[in-house]
Length: 443
Image 1 (cartoon, rainbow, N blue to C red):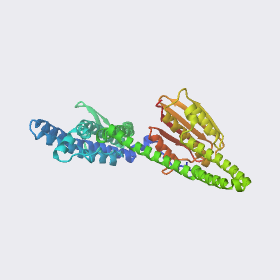
Image 2: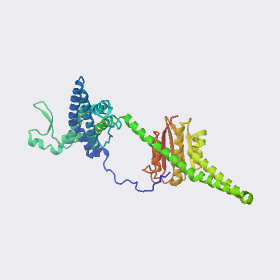
Image 3: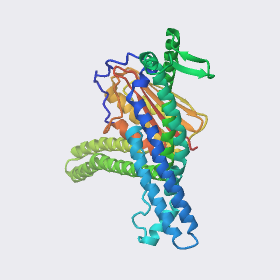
Image 4: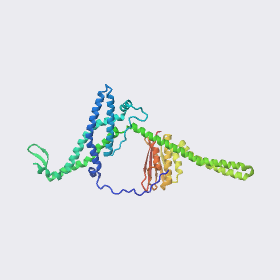
């Protein structure tokens, strides 16, 4: 396993925010970007809502004629264009990157106007984007009003002591008027009232960023749920990627087995056959030399058998099949160069495939500890949590392990991901290192 335990000392964080998050929020770029997104919602929604309702109504109304079908298809095409704009706006202002849905026509599909219209009308992604164009209007109306009222009033009230002098200078009122019955009114003009007004404004200003972020979070959900690929399509893409990882891993394992056989046991057996051939020729001429060569060949046979056993154990150890994870991991730990404490708390056995993946995961992690960690002790814990098999391998070495691209841990994480597993590495520089793996039980 080629993962190095890092020794970079540049993990210390420099600087830091002097103000608490609550006081920074009104001035952060994120707040103003998300506010801009919420304010732009309304003019965009007015256009898209009008387009969606008018075009959809026209298409449905003309379905009694042939014209309704192409109009509905063009309506959905326009909705997909809206999706492109809205995903770009979310990427720019919300820092939320959503993948585009799959094309309406895939390679190999029939092409032509009728094929395109049929595919567009049957495409669920297009209808979801049309639904977004409709739902955006009522939501944008709500967010626009809340954002403007809270933000504008907050800053106006907060800065009131700075500009209240303009009211008596340019009007016949002593200050901001709260209420009036015609003859009498209440005005904010004393020092206490100015301070109180500013405090109320400060409360609005400090609260408004969190309201804005909450509404922006809903915007992100709408963009992801209605303008991105469907969950089914995403799952298909994920499974296709996982299948590629499994195929590549299996091919790499086959190449490794072929290399080990060719360079190890096969080469040794070829040399053994040659030695026995020479011994056979010398059997009548020089029996003592022949006996010595046979004795050497016997030693080579033992070595070849041990190599074959090691190779078979690397493919799938018999102890794992016969006795399960507990004894198999204990045998694995006994071969580690670092003392390893093994604790397996399982009342049943998971699926054989998952059991094998768990075994080889621990095997690679223990190899990593032996080669790179400089640890004095290590531990392996295995337990079941509902429908998941949990593995945790720890060591008191120098730490610095990571899943950066090209490392052994990165490859291990890909293998686990291919079966809906997960790998989490906690390895600060200086240690200790804790690697937690999670696998589906599938018993």
